[in-house]
Each structure stands twice: as structure tokens, then as C-alpha cells.
Amino acid sequence: MVVAQAQDVNVLLKEADNLEKQLKENAALDKYKQVALVDPGNVTALVKCAELNASIGSRQTDKNSRNLNYLTCADYARKAIAADSNSADANYAMAMAAGKMTEVETDKRKITDYVRQCKVYADKALQLNPNHAKANYTEGKWHLEMLDLSWFKKAAIKAFYGGLPKPDIDTAISYMEKCRSLDMYLVANYMDLAKAYKFKNQPTKQLEVLNKLVKLPNRTENDAAIKEEGKKMLAEAQ
Picture 1 (tube, rainbow, N blue to C red):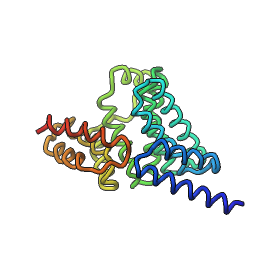
Picture 2 (picture 1 turned 180 degrees about the horizontal axis):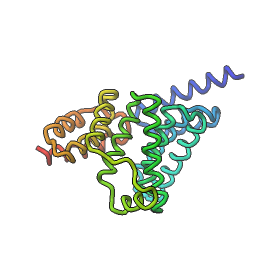
Picture 3 (picture 1 turned 90 degrees about the vertical axis):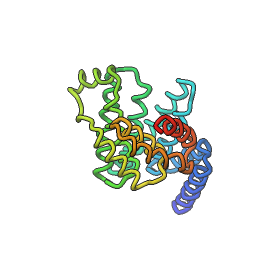
């Protein structure tokens, strides 16, 4: 019975992976959710459920729908970390989910806690696996976004935590360049890396990244829109 269940899980994971490659994220999510029901401690499925809810949520035009996707993303990330707190993937998922929650949360204290969680869990993921591409991207994105935080978020962080580690543009670039070396097709990383080079006023490097970005294949349903944004940035930068 256990062997049969393991075989069922492997079949579902393969089907889900194939659907992701076909850019059918909702259908892939349904498969991963089935795995999570059959095998509640399956970190791979839980992390994928978190990632896909985040991805689908980012495309929602209705605020309530987006909030629901992000809350569900965070719930699956918590389940992943509960299943294995020493999994680099689970810690990355927690960092990623916390980052998404900062986009929709309005309570100052909660925003601050999510900003802190994003850094703490990204750090832990990289301690466990320094070559985790998405954790490197998440860490770099944290530094970039902290440099460009709204006054509201900065004030909240200062009030409740006495500040966090000082963000640094060179650190942001370093992490995202490492991500690029580990995963040369992560479209979102190229976009934020281009923004980081723009922030640092390095147009040559910004153009190099953008020229590569617009030629990348689409590996998620969000990639086409990100590449369109990249084309606009490229036209403005040239």
C-alpha cells in the first residue's frame, strides 16, 4: 500500500511538472495540491503550491483574489517549513511568501514582521544551500526593495524592530548575479538585476542584462509580461 502511494505521488509530481512546462499553472497547482493531500509532508509539493499561488496571485487584477492567493501561498510555505525546517526549499518558500505578503498587508507591525521574515528565511535557505538559485534571488531582491522602501514601511521597521541589516546595492547585485550563474533562465531575476544596475547608474550592465532578458524562453505564465516590461526598459535605456 505504501509502495502504491509512493508511485501515485511520483506520477502526480511528474504530471504537475509537465503541466508547469506547458505554462498551465492552475492545472499544475491542482496536481500539486493532490500530492499534498495524499502526502502532507511532501516538501516538494508544498513548496510548489506556495510558488504557484504566488505566481497566480501576482496576475490577479482583483485585490481580494490576489490577497487570497498570497495568504494561501504563505499557508503552504508554513506547512513546508513544519514538514522540514532544515530544507533549503522550505526556507526559500517562507522568504518568498513573506515578500509577497508585504505587498498586500496594511498593518504596520505585520508588514515589519514579514520584511524581517523574508530576510531571516532567505538567510537560512542560503546557509543550508549557498547555491540555491531562487534563495539567492530572494536575498538580492530583499536588498534592492529595502533600498527603495516607501517611507511608511521604513518608519514601521524602525518603530518596531529598531531597524534591520542595512541594505546594500552591491550586495543585491552580487546575490542576483549568483542566481544568474546558477539559473540562466530565471526571468524575474534578470528584471530585478536590470533594476539594480539602473539604481547603481550602470547603464552598460543594465543594457547587457535587458538584452538577454528579452530573448529568454518563457518558463512561467508571468515571464511574457516581465519580458514586455523589459522591452520597454530597454527602449528607454538605449
